[in-house]
Length: 186
Image (cartoon, rainbow, N blue to C red; front, side, top):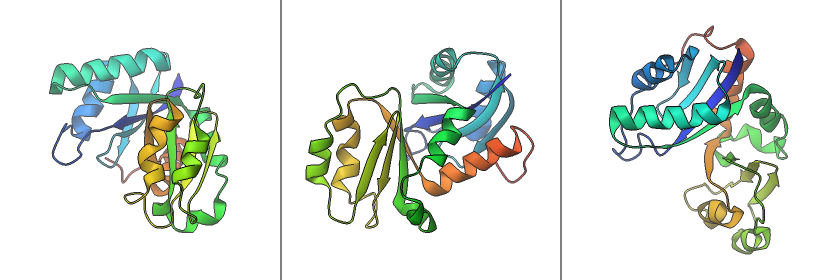
């Protein structure tokens, strides 16, 4: 069986698109996924499955829609791809302040990313790098104020879901321990 990470976007934000992690686990188990574990309420899941990432993405979104009446953006990554993204962090000195370091996971490698436009909205303290399907952003003044963060998905030209370094490293540790073996997660 393959080990996957699923990242959902747009759930449990501002009282909209409510989905408990218990329900998400039930949806995944109904799809034949095993050792399902979640981390926090924003839709970070580690599990095992024989299905392909493409079919899982589609089937998870459909399962949520059937159960809750909305279809979130669902990104499914294999364990090697996720761990490679973590290991590829170009800003290791920013790891000590995990809320300022973000990884944007893209659905595909952008065909024509407008990096010049992103550079134009970047403030001097911010740094970014695009590596394949991962957009690394260090925003010391915060992601909420960052014009760069707000325009990244549009300028990159591919759907993206973002996670801060704290979440990324927690999910990576779940992968390293093996799906379904750690305690303290939802």
